[in-house]
Image (cartoon, rainbow, N blue to C red):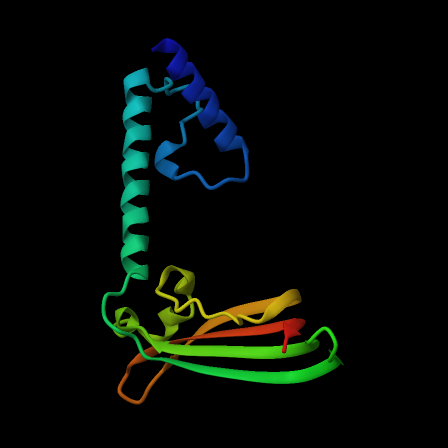
Length: 166
């Protein structure tokens, strides 16, 4: 048991000295007036941190699951079509793919807060271009827009450069 406590204490020291985020509740006091926490205190703090981490993971999964049907608007624009190889039946192109869908879980948020929300945590239709052979570059970004009735929509935009099959 003491070995486990010393390993966990070393881990906490490493995390405190690294650039990885560590909640303030797990950081130990280092002033001479305070004594280091006992092994049971360290273990209970670690268990509490793990429990909160599991709860956050569950919350993130709940945000990304949708049981109802979702209408997704899709727009595909080929910005540039380059070399076409008719014998091998492929071509080079620069394409733009945009998807837009309603996200009711964001309706209650004020517009200022919508800019700070992590949109990666919410449901996504995971659209893709099926006939792409190789992509040399892909840029993706997410944003929100508010409709006339205060309805919030997530917009995913992707710009893809690559080789496509005919």
